[in-house]
Length: 275
Image (cartoon, rainbow, N blue to C red; front, side, top):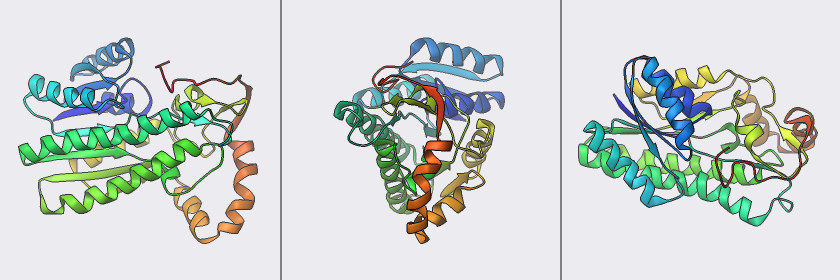
């Protein structure tokens, strides 16, 4: 299987790349940091897979088109596009600088649009292929202090659902959404931060391996959506059907569980440049 992965330099993207490589698949690794991608490529080869490195900023549509072209030129085809690239910023809505907020939307929303468009064009030419988008439980609810990320993930979920309806007329083409809850990855500590405390995944925190297993299973047996996280259904239920209770509880819980005690000065984190 030929799998192109955006956001492959760390977190879920890296874990998925190693998972595909371990079963002998070829992975095309996309991300902003060539150094990090080279390191992940070496890890993939150590596990028995083939790896191609493709530095890419998904916010740039032309770079994403080049990524797909490189995949086909290097590997002959593209079976799966796994889109994991995303950035995050913490802070009250009015305290996050406008350029930081807008860059989160460019990477997380525009990047998803670019990856989806380029992949689906290729899959249409091939007559088959599988687009897997990484959403989030916050694409179904709205915690405070993460407004740009929440906005972007709601958009990703909406796009995924629209695309699923559109590809029904193409039996060989599939669109899937993975919606993780709290996962142990570096995204929280590397995020932009304008709230004064380093972010953290609120408990219960799942190992990134659970998301990897879900992605590998999806690649083999496409489904519309997979949720990863024990309390995801409970949080979404509270948000949808008990909004008054949710609104009372969510801010104090976020301050206590979603933010660490580690202080941090205002920083854009990895929003503009890779860590």
